[in-house]
Image (cartoon, rainbow over all chains, first blue to last red; front, side):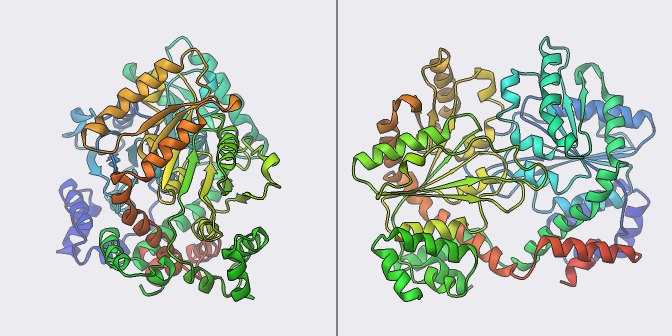
Length: 298
Length: 298
């Protein structure tokens, strides 16, 4: 089964890709061998993130259109962060990319996170890797930029695009610090708003120090995704980043991040937090519960 | 050495506590046995987080004053997130709590993060635990709420206080989604600003759905930290949370989160990302590098 699936996957057969993803999600025996047989791929993973309401879905939609027009093949993974505390609070930002669902050069898959506090998806790394093998020209991973997901996207994407909307300049300096850290390209969407230019100027001022430190200059692109404005420039800047010396130096860092995550998963196999919690509840009934002693016994 | 240190620690000797923390930070042999001998403590850990500029330091300062006035002993750990990409971008929020450094009932320690993307500190769990044993009435952990640190504080603190300043209501619904998830108590600081009441109203509206789901009601407290206003109410709400059924149910969840983190550290002992990256760089020179094969050999 796997041999055949792998061969079909490499011809770009969409059904085989969908099947591979399901097999990986369900950890069907043999999926690890499949992953181990994938060649090192240079297909770039584009991470698209930003706060809810920034227009990420519309932007991804416009980006798909631009890529398809240039006869590129594109896979899109939409990750909806869920949370153990308050399911649904982070949603309301659902994709509206349905017009692409049946296009032969476009593959779209929604993935629900199952981790804690808005991580991407326990198997996101493996899933992007089979997409790369399908092969596509670009793999896009779209997610809301909150909590864990913004950390994870920085360790997954070859180019991370952070989408924002124009707001008070004061805000740029406060809330976005986390997103600042991970962006390779900034998109100021809804750039037809009156305060857009001021916002872009403030953003560029803020980004200036990193430039001085000989860092790759972070591009700021203005878009109006609903009118497909600025999309070609965004693509250009993404590609410029992917061909930069800065990115080239970061490649092995990215692989080390990924290796680390895979290694943690491997070493933690057989443990799950729910069972751990039950175990702790039992232990706590006894006297002298000590967390460090408990962990030492595991 | 350890036996004596442990005994002095339990009498509340500040020098011994400082020494214990240093020994833990440097992983001096014997530190694990020290941790394993600590009794299960009910000293609450208060996490205080929020965006830069929200006034966290001033608030912590005012909180120390209120606690000291009521003859409480308090330990404060200030964590400055650093980042592998852009050191310093997250700072500028330094503590100005120096007046408390020599007070007998106050212990303050600054910890620099050494992890990636703004995590708290590789030994934050162990350090809070020795503080609890010292013993104090409260252990406060203060950090900027960006990226990894906001995730980690939710798994560390018995009560997480998220500090914000009044802003446009629109913003509450967007950027704060990550902070919303982790708050047990919200503080709207600088509540003497003209738009404070509107902000508080919007915040309460946003929090309402979680209340309906029978969740513990998240308190919203207005403060003006520079004038020490609202501090007693904050303390009250923190304590109310710590005595709530909601918190009681969460206790074993918190312990499971902590056990998980300790277990990951234990299982990943001997690995570090820098060495991993170098290893990968060497492997990549050969043909057919495959990440999954590479990890399988580790």
